[in-house]
Length: 420
Image 1 (tube, rainbow, N blue to C red):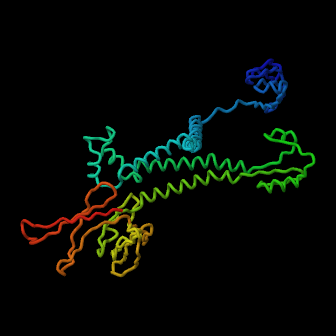
Image 2 (cartoon, rainbow, N blue to C red):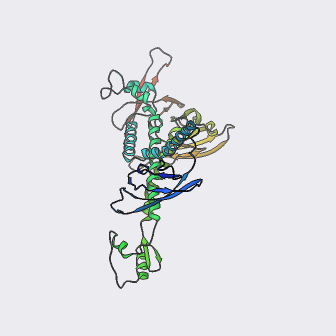
């Protein structure tokens, strides 16, 4: 901007580079002693929209001040503000980017396959055994598949697979993927499906994927027919809008919620429960807390752990063919004061539940053999299970004959075989 003539007071010339990507015809304007100057500019803009609007005139009003604009102050502070805005913008965009990562379908599929693989490994490898068991089962001098030894089992937590950090971490990632997909995809689809509007022009209706003309049809009759077919119908004057299948939009959300509940329940059960097993002969007792061990870091004992269980009787029902029909165990529960608080006969698929503890009858065996000798006794002979092939159960004991205090005790072996 420069002065053309000294005799012309406050006459200014505007040069074309003030407008980017435009052609501008400079003009001279004379303004008389005003504190601020204003005038209008007409120009033609060449933009990407010139194909549609070739001769569009844009008018702008520019106000020019007589004084020099003040210099920028605190440029360093302004730079900090811009950087702060950039940080805040990044923070605002970060949740969206995180949701986009977790809602990725290939990632969710990979998580499901990884969880399924770990579950298969947990099914093959015996769970909850002592370290010595894995030392013998997976020795280093004869590794399974050439590399798998007890170190893999104990280091990665495969001996308690379903409460191991690897398995629980994958469950957490899977839960985040399900929630992200629900929030970013399924809920917006439901919102879009619930939006409805009336198409008020024949041209808009013809642009639909399917359209037809019914000259003699009544809109009321059509609405009744559509309602009978399960559609939701809306009428507005001569216009009708109908839809169905909105409930189906909620189905994926319901599936995701069900999966989240199942995983949450499984995780809580794996990390906050107790498990244990014990073989108790008829007539003896045991304390619940002595046989139950924690399964995870959330396991917390309760007052019911002090309950004492007494095995009153064990008996079996038989079919007419002689096969075993059902097993029964008569149990009594006593508190610390020795008072019986509950009594129940449990059987297969009919457990005892008390104080948050569920007691199942999982197996049975012979613990002792009682014999009578010359109307004396009974004498209890401990029975030991013997390893056999197949479904047979074989137990053995030793019956001394003669002087039991002799260094050369004589007797007989007693074997008991059970064939299911």
